[in-house]
Length: 291
Image (tube, rainbow, N blue to C red; front, side, top):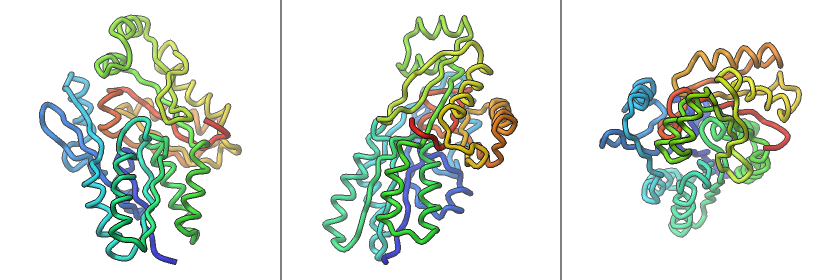
C-alpha cells in the first residue's frame, strides 16, 4: 500500500498543535484587512486572532479569497514527487471555490503523476466542523485503513457531521450582505440572536431566533440533545468562537452537566469565516443522526 497524506485547508480552524498531532498538510487561505493581505496559517503567525477580532469589532473592512489552483498544485506536487498519495478534505464548495480549485489542480497533477491517487472530498462543512471531519478521517487512517477506505468513511460521515452556530453581532452580518440593515437594527434593539446551521448542501441556513445570547447558546445544546449520536457522553465535541470565551464556558458547562461530555475542544474561529460573522460567534460541532 502506498503511503498517503491527509490534506485540508485552513478553514478547518485547527490549531498548529492539532495539525502537528494529526500529521496534516494544511493549505492556507488568505484574507485582506485594511488593504493588507494576510496568510491564514494555523499558527496565526501573521495576525493574532484576538487582534483580528478586535479590529473587526472596530469596523475594519475585511475580505477573503479561496486557494488558487496554482497554490494547490504547489502544495500537492512535493508530496506526489515523494511517491505518496493525497486525500484532501476541502472547505464546503457551497461557501467557497476552494474545493473547485483543488479539483482542477488534482486533474492537472494526475497527468503529471499517472501512478498517484489524489482524492478530493467536498466536506460540505466549515470551520471546526470541517476540522471534526478531518479528525475522524485521521483516526481511521491511524487504524491502518487505506486511502480509499478512509475516503469512503469520510463521505459517509459527512451527512452526520453536525454544525450549529449563533451570531451575537448582527451588524457584521449586515456589512457582509447576509441580512438587511433593517433586520440588523430591529434585531439589535430586541436583542435577537439567530440560530443557524450548515445544512445538507453545505450552505449556511438560519433556522430560528432566540431572545438573548444565553437562550441562543442553550438552543445549540438542545439541538445536540435532539440529533446527536448516543451516547452523547462519548462524543468528541469541537467548538469555535470569535473571542467570546465566556460563551465557550457557558456551553461547555451545559455539555458536561446535561450529557456528561468530557472531550470538548474549543478554539478561535478563523478569519475567513470570522470576517463574515464578526465578534461573539460560537459554533458547536458533533456527530449526529442527520444534519
